[in-house]
Image (tube, rainbow, N blue to C red):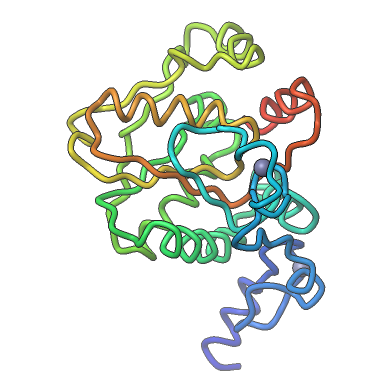
Length: 242
Ligand SMILES: [Zn+2]
Ligand SMILES: [Zn+2]
């Protein structure tokens, strides 16, 4: 057994979406590769209609442009749920590659740093990691720009989980985040999260970054939830994702 075979035996390479063991040079199994719910260029990521037929106007989910390579469906949904619930981070590299490609195509790739949506300390402790930070770190490495840890912080971390959850249920995330001007002032930033649903969380993070005098913020997420559901259902889903 040579070195790489030994490594594969010790740490088997797994499909980013379903976790099946696959050849060392692959990122996905054949089944998942053929079932990726890509968002074609020219399609509205919010309603899934061709841009010429879009009635939601991208639903103005965020005040800044935000792109995603995939819809939050099928095998990508499975992969992202696994990433959050099973302490399984093997999909991070593949998802970061796809985000890097999409963000570079959409924005040209001239960024000074990557920032990410922070989780509460309690949630990070419970899971052991923040999946948005893992994705942002891998993306920053691919784009060869710094990951700005601590640029965004989640307030009300210790004093009131309950209040924070309640505000978010009402779609009101104002006051949940703060940005550090020392890290973001004057910078062109790429804001990362795993999923965009109502956009309320990303929008609030973007506002805080602008208030902290960043020059520009644009967003990228692995996946976008298609609209067409009721607002209440969307909020419920967003809450599940936090
Ligand atoms: Zn698979
Ligand atoms: Zn639309």
